[in-house]
Amino acid sequence: MFVDKGINLINVCNEKNIPIWEYTIRCEVEESGSTRSEVIEKMRKNLNTMREAAEYGLTHETRSISGLIGGDSIKLKRYEEAGNSLTGGFMVRAMARAVSCSEVNAAMGKIVAAPTAGSCGIIPAVVITAGEKLGKTEDDLINALFTASGVGIIIAKNATLSGAEGGCQAECGSAAAMGAAAVVEMMGGTPAMALDAAAIVIKNILGLVCDPVAGLVEVPCAKRNIAGAVSALTTADVTMSGVTSRIPFDDTVIAMYKIGKQLPCELRETAMGGCATTPTGLRLAKEILFE
Image 1 (cartoon, rainbow, N blue to C red):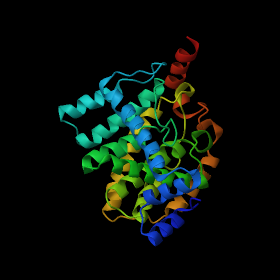
Image 2: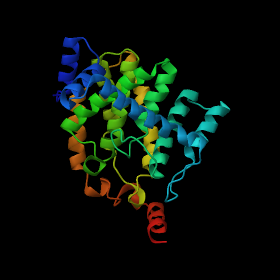
Image 3: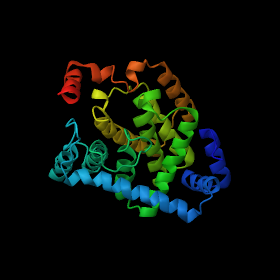
């Protein structure tokens, strides 16, 4: 059975001298009864689906059925190609991939809920783009997804991944934390460093509400995927520089859960607060739902 705390995950990985991804694979083999190759091939399929969703919007003006979002990923791709960005092509490419997945999701395309549909763009953008930068193989990317999965399991065991229960901090926050941990291990960081990265991401996103306009997973969700991807990638660098989190991962997960419970229902995916109830948000909802 997978451990239930981050500190236990670090300890077992240190004892066995293995990374998080290896521990996650071993637990999945044991719990599912599948062979190691079957488990890895299933994750390979997830990676391929992620790739398709992350790339589709870069060459197609994908639009949601509501018309609220669409075409932003291809704008970012063109901006990257122009070579005039402030943060560089690497970061703009990651942002483009993150929003591409969100656009594909809103257009009823196929995505991987990682860990949710609302946060589906963060982990693909982070893992795929970092993998390119680092010259990693497909197997390395698959391992990174297992790292992300392991961190996600700990969050799910101790908090929530649901926006309806914990706000967007539980969706995009968890995805960004999972992605940051994955990149740290891709870069050669230890399990402890991976969880430091996850902790820093969570601390920086605590309190983020879930306030979808018209109740649709589109606005402001798509752009929060962009922000989550950027947070994951920059935090990986912060951690690899030697910076640690003074508040441990387990504590940040508990804090996220408690804050989520303290959020009023209006700020937990009900479209009754935040951006959803601004004058523009209400107007858009009326246009979509009643006209």
